[in-house]
Image (tube, rainbow, N blue to C red; front, side):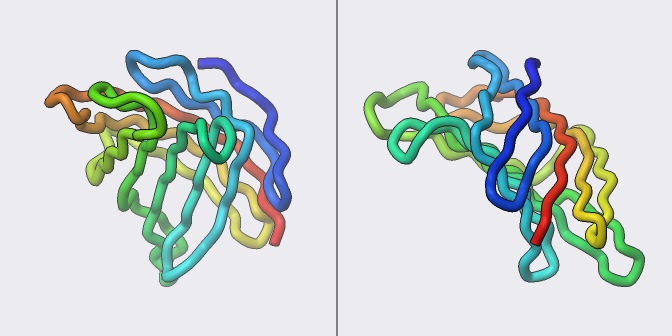
Length: 136
């Protein structure tokens, strides 16, 4: 897994992702946001038409400021189609995840490992880590 420093409006840092059977995600756009009691972290490689993306969602417990994993969406290569068609897989159970965050400082550091289903009946392991600074 190779790291790459990312700078996008409002967010800087590193996001590394390895998707089993495919090249590492070369992230060129990252976003951190809160909405509806959830923390959203999205990482994208490519442009509007040719891209892969990971989207992690964590539920925030306001009473004790802890996060629990909610789901991960992966949009990437399709095993059965070509052209603009994309595989969209959703995972609702993580093997492991670790996240340390400070909303006031805008720091988000963590790691994630999970297995997503593929459209051809198999599974694909996803491993990612991030160290981000997000400003409002």
